[in-house]
Image (cartoon, rainbow, N blue to C red; front, side, top):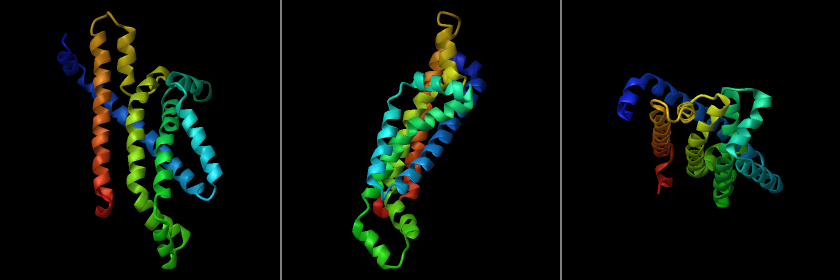
Length: 215
């Protein structure tokens, strides 16, 4: 059976795993984005603590994928939970790093002007700092998303959802009928997920970024 014939025959299963892959990535990145923004804002007045948090998240990023997923099993078992947690850990550093960079890049003069207009710290954050830092923050979210799209495939090792199931199943049956097609379908699917999400974040950036901030 050719690769095209395999796709046509197994389209429903592949589409289901494709949507699972997108969903688990977006959930993990959303959690990572919220946590990273809270950490970036919460440590703004504590530079030493901010450096520690950045150091910890960057160190966690260096843990090999199989090792991190394996460490999740005794605590969270198999399935969705360990997959999302591991992906969240991997996604945090790029988002946190960009959030810190974006917030630090806001002109102090603009912050002083907002304060002079009577804005409190919360209003300055919501109406000045975050909007100006948003393009940099969004780029961090975009990078983290594309990065964990590939890592999510390793989630199949702990019975997580997504296209990794096709790759692991295909490789385990290599030499058998359609084993290569199955693995290849998973790889191509992951590439398509990365492309779709990348385009999505480009569109989000154009919609949510003020025209004055677009380069």
